[in-house]
Length: 304
Image 1 (cartoon, rainbow, N blue to C red):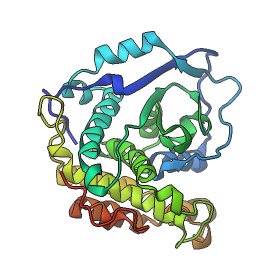
Image 2 (image 1 turned 120 degrees about the vertical axis):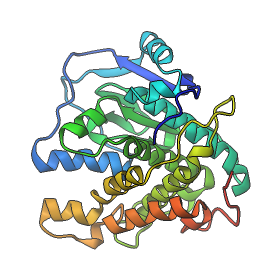
Image 3 (image 1 turned 90 degrees about the vertical axis):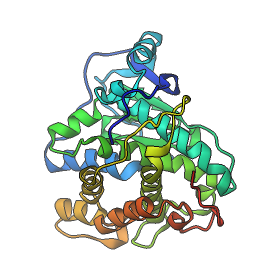
Image 4 (image 1 turned 180 degrees about the vertical axis):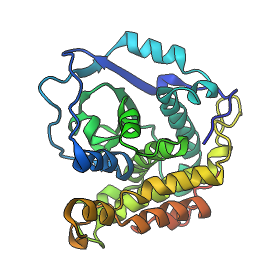
């Protein structure tokens, strides 16, 4: 979706980390395996609870950087900036998500708190382990933080992945959806250790896709502090771009590409058709309870 040029961004909501050691970039696996690893991280959303350590020994490690933070806050002040810069697009998308979900959550019977959001270079430490470009954007429940590697979308573009504005915004909205799930108590009742087509792991991910669709439904009405909507209503082409991004990385498509066949018993995120259906349900219905297979949202609509 395109940002309203005159909308005012709050870049302080995003922490910009800079490189503190090393000069090498993160090594990306070659061939179809490397591409799919990137796509999985971006469009499926990686739940990194209890995650691995990551990165190569030569990679730089991002740390708090006042100069980088100041630069972000100087360059990302309006919707026009978000239309020109990926970093500012992340800021603007987070601002819009903040605006919508802070308004919607009381009707859902839950107390809203803002997630932390970190933009980093190459790799960084998190409450879930070491994150890198290969993990893709993700939400870490232990520290309530969304992490986004700054070069990820560019690398994805070089591999032929979709990088239209709504495709990128959808990535952030999906991870923000995991934060909403945490606030609603989904993680308290879902067994995320299992796999399979009917597993809670799949249900959690499809619900996050659906929540991203709900935000998309209301995004053009979510205002900045002065009452100006952050975003213009999405076009059909933009919606199709997001759907294509989600559908391209269903468990079935990925397994067909890497293994030659799909094994439903090992699914963790849902099929391409399910992912498309989940986002579409949220976008068309604009109803959080209709996204919820765990029954944690009651009868609240979550509508503005």
